[in-house]
Image (tube, rainbow, N blue to C red; front, side):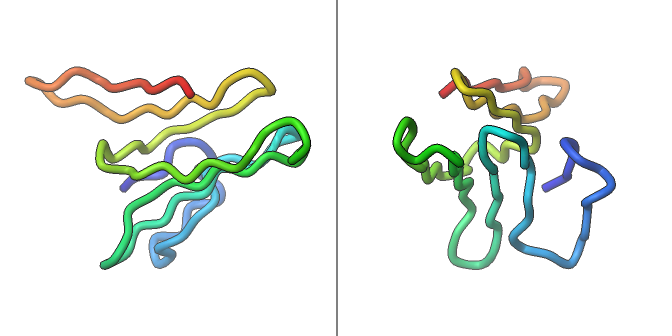
Length: 86
């Protein structure tokens, strides 16, 4: 999985890495032998509950705001790009 959100934070040896960290919360990606998933945690837990999303679509880009979590995967010649709004 490539890392597009924050190229300065890319560490190829990590199987768990941070995709987004802003004033709203964090998005982390896990990819190892047992699990390929994305965890979304909000700083204000009173308003938003955390999310654990299976990453079967190989999402490689992410962003979040107070109103949305957006995940995107790159497309190929015969497969269109995929964008998920949560």
